Length: 194
Image: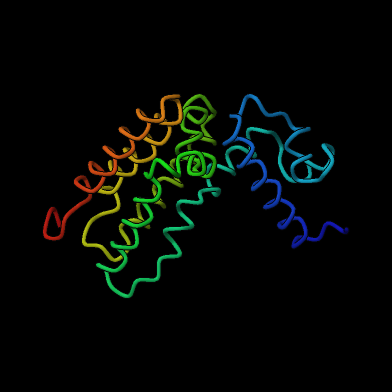
């Protein structure tokens, strides 16, 4: 396949999506370039046509690969209340103990915050950008600034990461169910702080 700009963009997205899933599953340090490129069904040599380093790929993952964001963006409510209700449904599922493994494997915030804190500035900038975009999406059509959604988002993603670190399923359920109640109470209320 000739590497046209369109082909390069498609291959870059394929590498990034595969890397995101692999990083979430095993962490940044446990994954090498050979494995990343095998996941993308490409050769290691072709990696450098798309990224200058594994860290650059990680920064791109942290900027773009957030299934939670994509779910929030797909909300189609016609009013602020409908959008809020759809957001609550998303986070209720996100914090449901029955979904813990799936959510952790699919959430870059929950699975990769620890890796990001030890990464370079570009990775942290990508994470920070995505975090702001997720907060802005949570705030869509609401009466509150996006920053007011940061604490509930941190609570939810942190709870998923913490629950995943615990072996006891009863303890996991306590964490996630308690977080769901706290998440709802932390959300900005109509008429509050407008």
